[in-house]
Length: 416
Ligand code: HEC
Ligand code: HEC
Ligand code: HEC
Ligand code: HEC
Ligand code: HEC
Ligand code: HEC
Ligand code: HEC
Ligand code: HEC
Ligand code: HEC
Image (cartoon, rainbow, N blue to C red; front, side, top):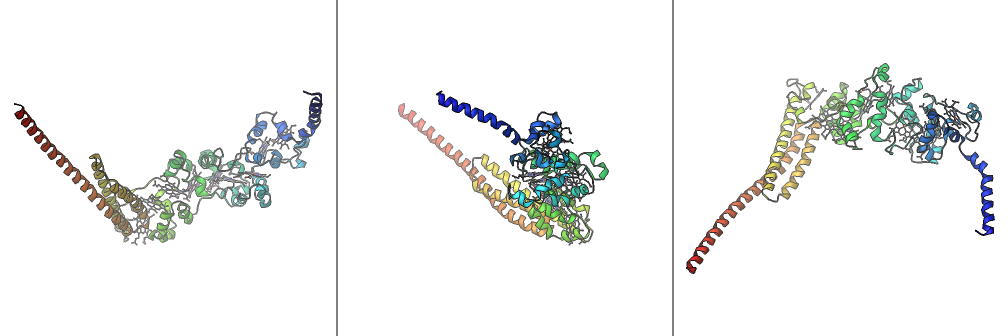
């Protein structure tokens, strides 16, 4: 190192030492002190490192107030400087809304982020009760974990689709906690066992609804009876459209019967099948109808069951015929392709049950049966062709063997 560069290095080092106090001042004193404290007081510092607010450049004082430049606890945590320590659950929504309902402020960070959380929250059962002084209902920090807040699409967030049922269950599955409110606490248990719960929690199918898809993110209220088909219709649009045009719509509305829920349940939705039509033990139509109630209810149920069974049976018959042909080494690609088309029509036919009109189901079933007839015929042709080939093979083998024996005898004769 030359003498000149040695001097330069020394100057740089001295400058750094001189600058140190000002750098220290710019550091967040809340963090600097809290990191040295006991668990509960230090934990937020560690957690906060990956919090979305930290990523946006915000610090402790942005939520808790106080003076983050002072290392004197009395001064930095002075209520006169707006400091509030443990936030009261009744005050939290207002604190969050200071920023989150301020369009001008939020626009600087993320113009695409909605700013309606507070208003929606206030219109929910949670928000209404919170405003009346109930500290047990969910407020912002119940669903968004303090110091560990993340956007909803972050898999570690408490409001990520797969984690939401667990977040709600913390209170709603706690029987003792919910007891004073007189509402049931089995929504999670039922949901977990339902087609939706299985699809989301077990198969991680993000298209299946979590609690918030039916209850809203911030407007958590039970959907009103009249809005249930809309809630389900967000995803099962065709079922909802059919129901809306069916005789049940007006009848259910008149008697205040919830639409989809009556037959399917809400949190415990399981798969219904063709066995639930008709007039047998498992028929759900019998819940309200009887054969002699003067409506076409049961007649329709029986007819729809007949049509759907015909199509399913036809499908399985054709499918097994094709399987036999395949095992005999025949190529049945075209017939397989057509059978796939019938599968599609079968699925549609089951959905058409929601027209509660057997002629609608019949039309679809008939069109499926027509394709099935073609598939069955093709399968029979392939099987006949296979039999023909076998016979042909047998006869030609016999002829060849016969000629070979003749040839052998002839050669023997010539040799002797
Ligand atoms: C020099 C150390 C020091 C500094 C600086 C400091 N704190 Fe604290 N803080 C403490 C101690 C010690 C406690 C626990 C004793 C108490 O409640 O006063 C505490 C408690 C808290 C609590 C919990 C209060 C409660 O009621 O449970 C919060 C929140 C908090 N500090 C936030 C902040 C914020 C925000 C800043 C910066 C503006 C800050 N602190 C600066 C030492 C400090
Ligand atoms: C986005 C807002 C927000 C920010 C930023 C924030 N806090 Fe908090 N903090 C809260 C809320 C809300 C509570 C109340 C939690 C509760 O009631 O369960 C809280 C509670 C606390 C408590 C009380 C102990 C506890 O866990 O209940 C401490 C201590 C604390 N915060 C420290 C900090 C420190 C240190 C920072 C900076 C590293 C910080 N907070 C940043 C919102 C925030
Ligand atoms: C009952 C639980 C719950 C409560 C209470 C709650 N949130 Fe949310 N929050 C959610 C869920 C769930 C999502 C988003 C999920 C998604 O988009 O898939 C969300 C999303 C957000 C987002 C991301 C933008 C958006 O709107 O989707 C912000 C910001 C937010 N909440 C702030 C708040 C604030 C502020 C409060 C209090 C006024 C609050 N939340 C109360 C559950 C809650
Ligand atoms: C000082 C202003 C401020 C306060 C107070 C505040 N936030 Fe935020 N919040 C922000 C900013 C800025 C972002 C970052 C937006 C971005 O970059 O996406 C953010 C982001 C979020 C997000 C992630 C949104 C997303 O999907 O990207 C959630 C959730 C959230 N805040 C919830 C809360 C809750 C709950 C409270 C109250 C306990 C709160 N915030 C208090 C300013 C604030
Ligand atoms: C901090 C605890 C807590 C959390 C977390 C919570 N809730 Fe609640 N919730 C309550 C309490 C308490 C009530 C009040 C019950 C009442 O008044 O009927 C309530 C009420 C409701 C209601 C209205 C029930 C009725 O018929 O009055 C719905 C719907 C609801 N919550 C859905 C949700 C959903 C969905 C989530 C998750 C995204 C959630 N809650 C998270 C505590 C919580
Ligand atoms: C497929 C849509 C759907 C999903 C998913 C769903 N709910 Fe519901 N929930 C409803 C409907 C509809 C009602 C209204 C029931 C009624 O009025 O008969 C309801 C009612 C409620 C109620 C009021 C009390 C009651 O049982 O009637 C609470 C609390 C509730 N749900 C919480 C939850 C929680 C927690 C989850 C997630 C574990 C969840 N819900 C998932 C549709 C749904
Ligand atoms: C957010 C979208 C969404 C909402 C809202 C929704 N579902 Fe579903 N539902 C699904 C998905 C995805 C499946 C497929 C699950 C699977 O079979 O893997 C499903 C499956 C079903 C099934 C079983 C069908 C089958 O083929 O296995 C029934 C019945 C059902 N839902 C009824 C309802 C009812 C009733 C409502 C309203 C109370 C509703 N769904 C709300 C997405 C939704
Ligand atoms: C009167 C009883 C009844 C009502 C009301 C009803 N369903 Fe169904 N639903 C059934 C029956 C029965 C089946 C089984 C049909 C079959 O497989 O043959 C079924 C099957 C389903 C399936 C699985 C088959 C498919 O279409 O993928 C879904 C999804 C479904 N219903 C959604 C809904 C929705 C959404 C509503 C409200 C708009 C609703 N259902 C209203 C009786 C009903
Ligand atoms: C929750 C009760 C309830 C269930 C379950 C129910 N229905 Fe109905 N249904 C009604 C009511 C109420 C009417 C209107 C009766 C009237 O017009 O007098 C009706 C009307 C009908 C009609 C029109 C009748 C006519 O003569 O105009 C048909 C068809 C029908 N239902 C079929 C079915 C089938 C099929 C099922 C089973 C999948 C079923 N219903 C399940 C309550 C129900």
